[in-house]
Image 1: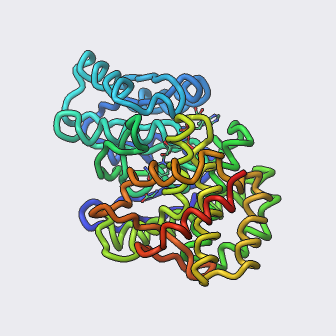
Image 2: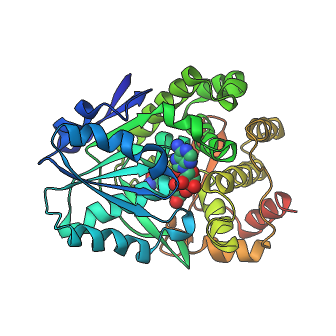
Length: 363
Ligand code: NAD
Ligand code: GLY
């Protein structure tokens, strides 16, 4: 087992990464206030993993409530959130009940937001089962739901007590979902870790073959990067750079997800195409050379990810991007690349260059 810490003072917490962690109740027990948990999962993940997690907890004397939600990004909304509250109240879960998110980023974001607001806040634990959730969404405390007008527009910062990333769960993950997770892994290399980018180029075949050792290394390095960024700027308030850099490609990508309807493109796929758009714009601003843009595109393509955006039309992209959380006082602040391994936030990109970059990257 590999372990690291997210250093946030009194709210610091460990991330454990490795095979067979799901059944190790002893990793969870010290983090419970009382022997009472509600495990939130979905119709796909629960049949695969819920018993593995719940049985050892029950054997240790923990009372377990199971909350099974419908699967999919289209369900990351108020209605589904309310189903969590309905069941927590029906089963008289109190303020010391720990919520456990068992699933991908959708379950993690929903459960975290439920934990942030149920009875004004209860503890929660992340047990991520997708690569994307193990390298990104389970770490850092961003929780929330989508609004029809914008992705992740309603939510809260609420840190978990523990992240338990069982790498065995990735063996059942569909190939398309593995690739979507690789988009966020590649992101860390692009924004702040050039040696990791080179490592990913060397290890891409092993990662796609679901090699346990390569995956564990990639998850650990990704979590290290994320933990450092979050520790330095937990609430994303830095005027420049900071946590916002984790959103490379996301402003373009969120426009694809919202524009096409949630669930059409996977989040990681939209981020991949969005990172190419951000790279293209960085090139047009004279920062990245053409070879660097090609290097990034090639790596994403090797990871079986899209490198061209959805054909929404540049004006629609701009309209949707105007709803992004990266808009401050009406100004669109984009995450761009000064060079591979160095991202910056930038609010001065000319509108015509943004349009040109979008058009160059869409059919
Ligand atoms: P997801 O949660 O929809 O999971 C992808 C699919 O895989 C689902 O159908 C799920 O049921 C299935 N699945 C999960 N684990 C499985 C397993 N082990 N075996 C088989 N199937 C499995 O998608 P995701 O990519 O994990 O997460 C995307 C979401 O995360 C988006 O809503 C995005 O906005 C959010 N996100 C949040 C943050 C954050 O910091 N909070 C960061 C990045 C992304
Ligand atoms: N995924 C972006 C963040 O956690 O800040």
